[in-house]
Image 1 (cartoon, rainbow, N blue to C red):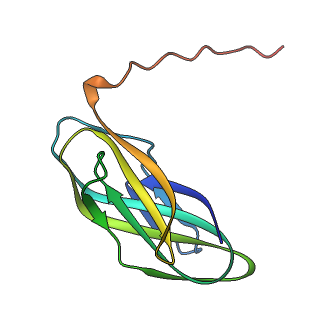
Image 2: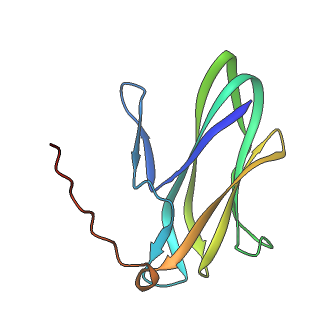
Length: 137
């Protein structure tokens, strides 16, 4: 089994076609103040490989001493050479301080990957740098 990627979003929906729609894809959480509570936080893990496995996701505080949220183990079955998307949704997740939270993905109760989720105050974010347009000749 291989975890191809992890995406953090405000919401993930399954469309009538079976495709996923991702809303509010983020690499950091910009907030007006802390503490802050996310009404919904969705995590998409995209897997490749084969076999039957259990996967779970947890979020740790920046110092890794406390668990902010933990999912129930979820069954994942992939045919040989297959792939699958696993969506974990956390409701009313509280971030009590700024810092680099840790999103962990476990496979069969073994830590497989970690991704940082920085929580920063809005005024602390650097100003955006205007992009220069280029002319094509």
